[in-house]
Amino acid sequence: MERKNLLIIGGGGREHAIIWKLAKSPHVGKIYCAPGNAGIAELAECVNITATDISAILEFLKNHPDIYMTVVGPDDPLSLGLVDKLEAEGFRVFGPTKAASQLEASKVFSKNLMQKYDIPTANYETFSDYSMAIEFVKGQKTYPLVIKADGLALGKGVLICENFEEAEQGLKQIMLDKAFGEAGQNVVIEEFLKGFEVSVLAFCDGKTILPMASARDYKRAHDNDIGLNTGGMGTYSPNDKYLPKHEEFAYDHILKKTVDALNSEGIKFKGVIFFGFMINGDNVKVLEYNARFGDPETQSVLPRLENDLMEVFEAVIDERLNEIDLRFKEEKCVTVVLASGGYPEKYEKHIPITLPDKLPEGVTIFHAGTAMINNQLVTNGGRVINISALGKTIEDARKKAYKIAKKVKFKNKHLRTDIAKL
Image 1 (cartoon, one colour):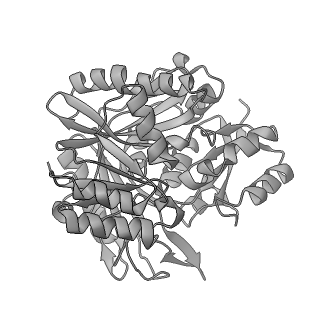
Image 2 (tube, rainbow, N blue to C red):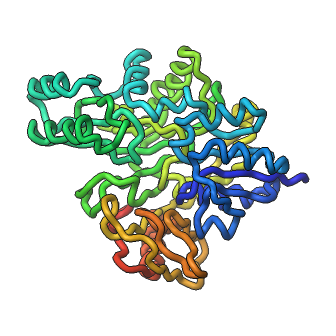
Image 3 (cartoon, helix red, strand yellow):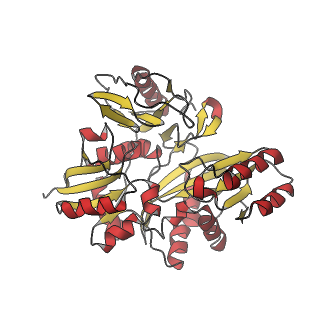
């Protein structure tokens, strides 16, 4: 069997999990990663190119004709049109085009799409003018209100406002102070949905959409869901509250309708769509879309995937996803994120890390923000290490993950202690 060489774009926990899974495939040869991290370097050759340096990525591919396929992990290069540029040069790529990735890159685009095609979501208004947004908020009687920056903001551009003062402050922060840069040119103001959250990742080839196992993400920085929004402090899969009736409704009224809606707009989505749901009773509504594997959901979902990931990627690119039967292990998976003290605000980098010598069966450490400096493993980001553990039950997996979390040492280590505490 011919093994094929790959280039993975990105350098976080999600990319480590994707590479870890791909490395198990008999179809995969050498893996390159741009830029990668210290953990990825154990499985792939890391190249010093940032994920958004499109010209350098193109140059690298032209100089490496041995690379069969490129897989794009993060949102930024997708929204910059990396996939379009690579395809235009004749390269084989896994990931959505710039037009398709608007699903994540523009909250205004995705909300308008849902409204137009009757996909259940929260009621909302969009604004590009600060004074008009303020006037709208003044007229609101029901709080909390949710304010979202239109563009990409590393999972942090969503504010939940309990009263007018907080909403006014939030709008000022996003639209005037540009806390999220150009992402705050436009805002979406929407009703606050009550219920429980579910994350569902789904492979899509533009025609067929195949959901993966569900997950639950913990966004807030501290226990009991308090503190600032982060990129995610931990996950578990499957989400036990996501019942077959919810799954059925979501597939018919959200997943399938989203693909049909995009096609009606002349947009073919090929890659992974992340659906963030809020569920209240029998009601399932879309909180958000992402146009790629979720992070850290991927670190809980891929360890449970029984399929060869390379075969699934091939089927997506070749538009024959209908031939794939996705299968997941019965075992549950819990992922705990170890972050730098101060994340998601200011934090120190390059703090030495000590990892346990041996890991028990079913436990994997995925590196997120790590680097090697003078042969010493050090922190190099806000989210540093992800510990993913498989177990017969959620509680079993949880105990395994936290046991290893204790053994990972670095100064000012921050973690939530309530991930998957059912």
